[in-house]
Every structure is written in C-alpha cells, then in structure tokens.
Image (cartoon, rainbow, N blue to C red):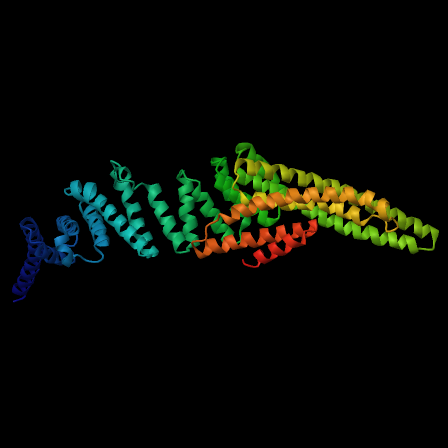
Length: 461
C-alpha cells in the first residue's frame, strides 16, 4: 500500500511537468501558426510554473511572442501596458537560464537590443507626457542593455551611453530633481560629452541651491574646456556681477574681450562696470564734498586760532580728496564711454548702449553746474555774465549731445514690437525711461515747451 501511494505521487508530478512542457510546445505551435493570443496564454502559464520557470526554451518563446505582439498593431488588444518591462526582463531570464547558450543568438544578440529600443520609445513617450520619473526608469533600462551591444548597434542609432545620460539629465531637471540632475550631468562630464550647456545647467542647479562657490568651479571647469564659449563667459560674469565682485569681473571681462574683441555684449557689460565704478566714486565724492563744506564752515566760526588752523587743514585735505576722486571718476567714465561707443559702432541697434551714452554724457554737466553755482553773488551784470555765459554754453552743448543719444535710443524703442503682453511691457518700460531722461534734458536746457510735450507723451506709457 505504501509503495503504491509513492508511485501515484510520482506519476502526478511527472504529469504536471509534462503539462507545463506541453504549454511551452503549444506556445511554439501557436506562434508558428500566427495564433498569438493563444500563444501568449500558454507561455504566460509556463513561465510562472515551478517546473518550467527556469527553462530557457520557455523564456525564448516568451520573448519571441512579446516581440511579435509589440511589432504588430493588430495585437494591440492583448498588449500589456508594461510590455517594455516584461520584454526586457524576459530577455534577461532567457540569458540567465540559457547556460548552454542555445538561444543566445536571439535573446542575447538581438532581442535584448530590441528591448532597449522599446524602452527608449517608452521613455520618450513618458517624457512627452511629463512623467519624468517613469522616463528615467525606461532610460535606465536602456543603459543596462548597452553592455550587450557588441556591434554597437545601439550607438549607431544614437542610443549611446552619452545620449541616454543626456535624456536622463533632461528628465531629472524637468522634474526639479536636483540630486539626480547633478549625478547625470556629472556623468556626462566624465564621459566627455561635447556640449558646454551641461556645465551651464550644472552651475544653474548650484546657484539655485545658493552654492555660488561650486557653481563658479563648474563654470571654470567648462571654460577650461570651452575657453571662448560666450554663454559660459556670460554666466560667469553674471555671477560675479550679482556678487558685487566687480574687481574680478573686470579681469574676467578683459580676458573674454581678448578672445572676442568685437562682441558688443561683452563690451557693453564692461562699459556698464566702468560706468558703475564712476557712479560709486561720484557718490563718495558727494560725501567728501559735504564734509569739506561743513569743515570749512567750522573753520570760519572757530575763534581759537589753533583749532581754526586744524579745521582749515582738514577742509583743504578733503578738497584734495574730492578733486582726486573726481579724476578717478572721470577716468572710469571715459573708459565706459569708449566701450559704449564701440558697442553702437558694432551694433547700431543696441538701445541700452545709446541710452547709457546719453546718461553718461548728461552726467558730465555736473561739474559745470557746480562751477555755475559757485559764481559769487557779489558779481553782477557783465561781470557775472562773463563767467556764467561760457559755462552755460558748455553745459548746453553737452546736453545736446546727450539729447542726441537719448533720441537714438527712443527711435529704437519706438521700433520695438508689442504683439505680445511681454513685448508691450518691455517697450513701454523703455519709452517711459527714455522720455523721462529727454524731459530732464529739455528742463536743464530751459526749453519749457519741449519739457511739457515730452512729459505728456511719457504719461501715455
């Protein structure tokens, strides 16, 4: 009785194994006959059963059937949503279980490469649907297939390691996943990916994270590889400008202009830096002048001779500082003017350069106005006019030059498009600023009519 029971159990196990092997054979027959739905049902049973789940033949047919379904739109109704994952994993199982390499000609040398294309297409689709996390997962699968690509068929079809990491980086950046973005961009740098944009993107991430030091290191790395790349130069300059490190900025600009001597943007930025230097010095001069005036007043009312002498000396020293700082401001302004003039020579449509030339020229009248205001009140009539009139003519001549620059800027502003809200806003901003400056020039020229006309026009914007 005991032996009979054992024999019965053995027969049951054998019959089960035969049934599963029969599912593999049935799947093969169904596949050959084009009965794909039945083939899929049979093979789905075989690959999960303990008796055949490690059978390379089962996995070979599993992959073959999925490949057929994927390639034929007629089988869309039986195509699993995760067919790309199943196909790839089926290829792996076929390769793992096929210790005798009986099916490597297909699973290892062909099908798994097809799975890369399949997953890449799914990745593109996921990206377009803004499912960036899934896109990255599909691209990761493509990367894992590359070691099987002995003939570089993937690379020949633009599915190189570099390109896949680029797609992954783009997906990570689109989803604002900074940690992954940095990993993928760093990998591209290590792979010597030939595009300066990866350094700009990496630097932008660090800037977003308030890590300016690392951002500058990344840009420096990029500029070492692409020394004349304008976008990297501009990005570096913008960082130093935002940091207020104009000392470093000028050195960087000078180096960049040596490489690109006719780049209007670089020249404009350097001109703006010199312009800012001049303005900063003039602010300092204003403070020095106030100190000198106050100190001289103290000297005038001081009764003690020794203290009076000290105040006079202090006032004289402050006056010297004021004059020296004036020379320094003028030197910076002259450098700015040269750069701005070169900009409009290279690009006659550079509206900001014309506007800055107008403002810089207008500022030249400050010293003249100071001299006019310093004419002693004791002078009257012809004596007064003899000093005042030449100064006024000098001032007005400068103002007319400034007005010409402002009018050139205005003509360019008037030509700006306004077909979108953004463009209209930009144009209106230019018009308001330029017209205000023109209004001020007319007021300083004493032309009341033009002043009021310009004011009314400005108010339209």
